[in-house]
Amino acid sequence: MKVLKFGGTSVGKPERMHSVSRIISEGKKNVVVLSAVSGTTNSLVAISEKALSGDKGEALKLTENLFVPFYYEFSDALLSTSEGKRKGKAIIDRHYSFVKQTIESANPFTERENKLLLAEGELISTELFQTYLQEQNFKSVLLPALDFMRIDENDEPDIAFIEQKLIPLLKQYESYDLYITQGYICRNAAGDVDNLKRGGSDYTATLIGAAIRAEEIQIWTDIDGMHNNDPRVVKKTFPIPELSFDEAAELAYFGAKILHPTCIRPAHERNIPVRLLNTMQPEQKGTVITHKPSERSVTAIAAKDNIIAIKIKSARMLLAYGFLRKIFEIFEKYKTPVDMITTSEVAVSLTIDDSKNLDAIVSELREFSSVEVDKNQTIICIVGSFDQDKNTAGKKAFSALENIPIRMISYGGSNHNISILISSEYKHDALNALNECLFSDVLVNI
Ligand code: ASP
Ligand code: MG
Figure 1 (cartoon, rainbow, N blue to C red):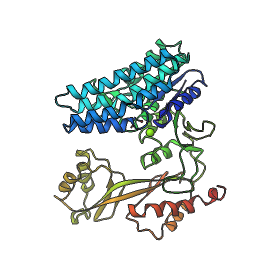
Figure 2 (cartoon, rainbow, N blue to C red):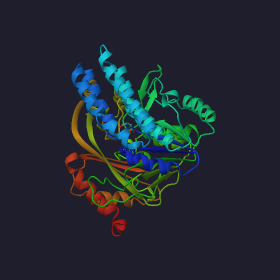
Figure 3 (cartoon, helix red, strand yellow):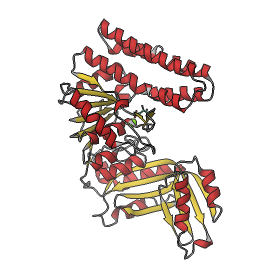
Figure 4 (cartoon, rainbow, N blue to C red):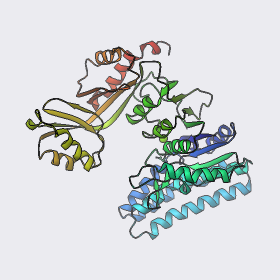
């Protein structure tokens, strides 16, 4: 069995949903994970923000803008028989009133209602899609993600639970060919509706793939695979045919928008290939992610913005032990992950991208050191398999960046990553210079 996940733009128009139905009917037995129609989750976030701030009037207005006429027209164009159209309209009516009622009756509107609204996008897209599949006589069944996807007290997916619930469900519907389900949504440890954070549908797909030990997980988007560099910033980029799990995880974490950062882990743990494909050009090869190290020494470059660099300096660090522990305990206390770190004998520089608890962290650090904070930084991450490499990647990268002020370097943490911190104003120049220099052999053929 394979797991096929389709992102928001892949289901963003009725005719795209029609193409998806053709793609999924090619193999026998597929689990199909859908995102919300593109733009819907953003609208739901905006609706909830208004409702959370107490502005129910504006929340209701935004709700109307989301549903009318968009979803009625969408459903009408998706379905072709009068019976199908009637069912589609009933689905939209039901969700539209649910959102309105949730806002109107909440007193006050809390995080709980917020999560209920955020789940609506995937519930609508899958119900509409399943109605279309039934109209076309596909042997498909809708399996509600809320019945088997769960996160624990630490918001981590509970893979044992998912496995326990999902395998019997698939068995129960053994005679079906297609199992349709929602990405992103789940229940939390308390049993309430929750989600796997923005972009989490990829994670749903790899968790399901791992739970059922799928033959392959396919992530269908609107681009032809993972590119060697950020196509929004660099003109000449190309899709990477093969990547290792480690490389893909580094790239997804350090800015490649095509994949949710933690979604590689479940596939990696169970060694299930992940294929990135393009719904608009299904014949393109895309990118396949497996355990195999890539053949090139440098595979790709990614950039992550909105990074904060913190320099912690203390005379007491000199020849002292326990200093780093003291620092990291503070980050741990505020549940703030550290991305890059470099040290000298008297100072430590590190980066974070979550600024929520920055003030509290800095004030605790100041109790025993002097602290400098630089915002608007970018991490440039060069990914590859550097073990066989005689450091040529590093040398080339630094010569390409000779005109760019470098704030921090992290090299040797793993064999797959060289991270360089620069001020975000230099990102465009840095990515282009690195592209020219590290991929000149491929670029001549583009
Ligand atoms: N619909 C959710 C989002 O927009 C989840 C996803 O599409 O992956 O973030
Ligand atoms: Mg996505």
